[in-house]
Length: 275
Ligand SMILES: [Mg+2]
Image (cartoon, rainbow, N blue to C red):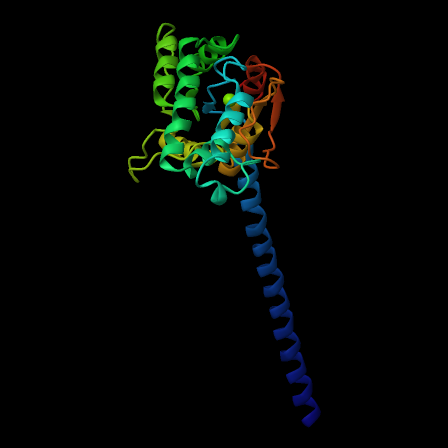
């Protein structure tokens, strides 16, 4: 009698274990399906992003306007010379390796005035001689024909951007937005920090309403343009002009996604993304 009860209990226990195993396998399979499905969605989403550039942000000096128009070596030497005789030099410590615009902000009030004159003289002269880089107009017209947005971010000042826009107006090209080092952020009431700070790029991506992966930064400076793009997580094209345009920040160069020799080189890159 006792052995019969034991046998019945063992049979019931075996059935329960079998049901539990079946349930576990089914749950595992369901989880497995749930795990694989999102991976597929992510992959498709990434491919979609990689196939469309919706906006291009250009640097101005050396990119849309020809390299060499500004003597960056002479500018650095002039500002550093002012800094070495400035009362704040002890705070500035070593001007070697510092961003030239950062050095200006650290000068005494008199030093800022003197440095401002140097910058103004240089930028006024640059503005008078302003013209477009060979191939720049064709690139901008190509973007317009593809309905790709175009903007500009420069460490130069607003009057230089207005001069650039007046040149482009003749050809029906509009860059929007245009951000200079004196452009005021409407939210903060303060100037938008110049490249390599990424704030200008981030604000443009936000204004356009594009995904960050749909935007390209094009510039001739590894220290400023490419660094800003890297920090903003924006893809970048470095135009290697072979001209020293370093602004002073040593050992801080960005890593471009592409390197071209001329601005016309970005057309082939856009073809790959927007066939
Ligand atoms: Mg430049």
